Length: 286
Ligand code: HEC
Ligand code: HEC
Image (cartoon, rainbow, N blue to C red):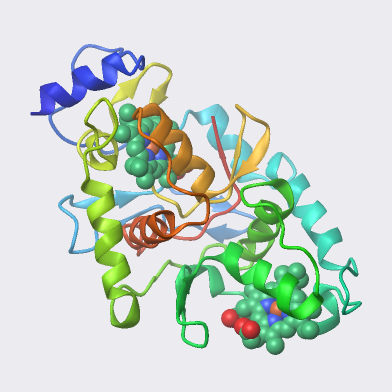
């Protein structure tokens, strides 16, 4: 079974370099503790009991030291430019109500410290699961009378990064029970579902083969605690969904509808696999 998976990776055009492929996930070669802006990150933790691996690691731990360095200093982190842009947006009046974010949230984005640790989460008034993107666009539409920002693009990704930054270092603790229990189970099913022409699932790479080198990349556990992440590849902040979409294309699977129910369920489930890791954002990746 494992061999089928690995040959599938090969035929995906992501040639396995190095001598041997591992039969199961391997921890990073070296686990480095790290600090950003004086805040210590929890980048290694005991895995939540619902997954079949002993430990969870931030994606940062699997990157090369050059890429890691870029995330350690906000002056070097290119993602911070988009956070600055988000701060401008925060103060910009837009829409029919003549308001900006700042008009109502006078204490600044600092008010949202801790929020990222529990997102996505259930909105009882709306009777739906909300990601950070959903909350921000709800604010724009309902409180500002403005257009929602485009899904997966700079304005929205930047604002998510600005808000997530307020929780930097705090440990993720997404709820998986109560009103979200069914959605969470749906996300779990999607995570393990074999799909696309290669018959792969998310777990084929991120659970069974993390630590394995494929081409220039070392597979991580596919955690989302560093998102949005700045990618050197496209020189932008990338949302969780942007990344899911890219992975689905690599699996030769048709990506789900942007902002749709499958991606929401998957985002919740994948977030919960990182319960115990610090919110880092913005991360820097290849
Ligand atoms: C007209 C006033 C108003 C404006 C303008 C406004 N908000 Fe809000 N915001 C609220 C209120 C009231 C709540 C709490 C109730 C809720 O979640 O809807 C809230 C909640 C939030 C939350 C969730 C906080 C939590 O802990 O649950 C976030 C995040 C947020 N706003 C961000 C923004 C951003 C970003 C903007 C600008 C794009 C914005 N808001 C514009 C009034 C506003
Ligand atoms: C063919 C192997 C493969 C499959 C299958 C795959 N991915 Fe990935 N994924 C990658 C590679 C390669 C990267 C970049 C290196 C890394 O972080 O693992 C990546 C990165 C990620 C990241 C970013 C991690 C970080 O810290 O930046 C997330 C999140 C992710 N994948 C989620 C998923 C999800 C969800 C699925 C299933 C829909 C999936 N992946 C399926 C290969 C795969």
